[in-house]
Image 1 (spheres, rainbow, N blue to C red):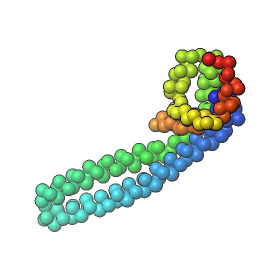
Image 2 (cartoon, helix red, strand yellow; image 1 turned 60 degrees about the vertical axis):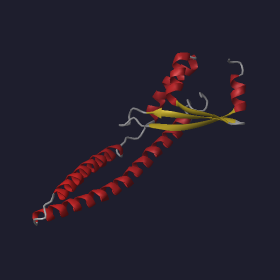
Image 3 (cartoon, helix red, strand yellow; image 1 turned 120 degrees about the vertical axis):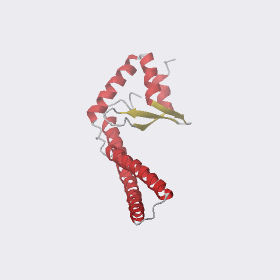
Image 4 (spheres, rainbow, N blue to C red; image 1 turned 90 degrees about the vertical axis):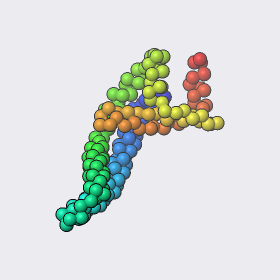
Length: 171
């Protein structure tokens, strides 16, 4: 953990991967926003057609019900677009933010503060996968600089042999 994740050399790589993930999410949001905007234009056209029909004297209860359904859907889509626009303006993570986070973690690990290490594992380790020759740890990292506190998965792989050598006297 200290060697593979909580070190200075890992920080630029992690920042790059996290920022790439943020960028990919923003692109995905843009694509889905385009589809939502198309649906919104279609709904606006339907509303306009219903208004035209009503003004020409074709007022019926079904048209009024359909009009309310379309207006509700339009309002919902407008809120979704606003939410996605906010998410697409997520700030980039800086190396300083990662260093600050790692400094806290590193202290717990080095001091072998068992309660804090357990809390760290509970909060930040998503999954541990053990293979014949290696162990993969998937970390969940949340940066509070993000508006929606979105987590990112970071994978670290360590050879079993390395773990056995380093920690054979612990336990």
